[in-house]
Length: 160
Image 1 (cartoon, rainbow, N blue to C red):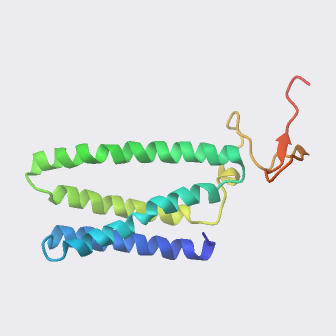
Image 2 (spheres, helix red, strand yellow; image 1 turned 90 degrees about the horizontal axis):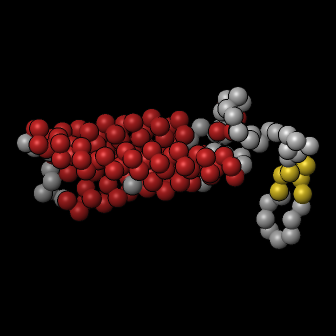
């Protein structure tokens, strides 16, 4: 994913989401196929997030940590959606609360996406005092391996 295309692509996805959800809310029977197509285009943010996880880390350890946090919270938030829709429908008797919640979530997605598409690495921003953190800037011996695998970094243990 080219850096210069990340934010315009995010803007396309967010715009598609907003137009699709608003159209489904205000005119659900006018062109439902159009609204659903736009929402499907907006869902491209999911694959974009997966790509950004690898692009925002310098080491495999950081990719794994970032992936764990991002996907764990993402699925917790997504899993609460159906419950929230049911609760809002029960309280209000309609779907207006759901549409407002979804559009607020898209706004949060836009802000988080804008921050995530900055050309920075998580390794450079994390607090160095975090126990067990292995930043890429820590130098060590590099051992070559056969094949196309990346080099293995060997760090001396504390005992010797």
